[in-house]
Length: 68
Image (cartoon, rainbow, N blue to C red; front, side, top):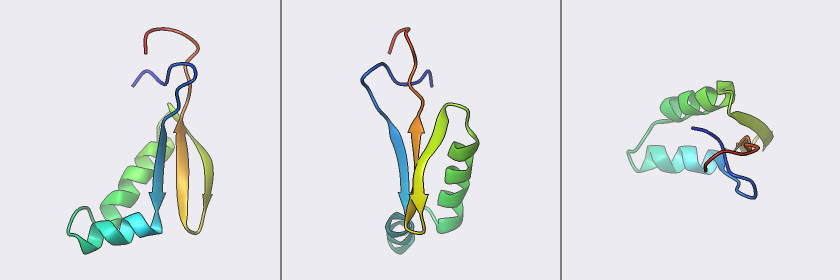
């Protein structure tokens, strides 16, 4: 993942509602989704830009040039 072109924005959002809905519908369980969130949090291209007890937001860092 090279980043986001100028003026573009990409975020990873994970909420308690998404966790509950995913488990309820038999998709990914809370443990798997939390593992994905930890992976995004540890990933260099992402930075945490918000979060509270209801969820967390990580933004893909913007690039300063190159091809989108």
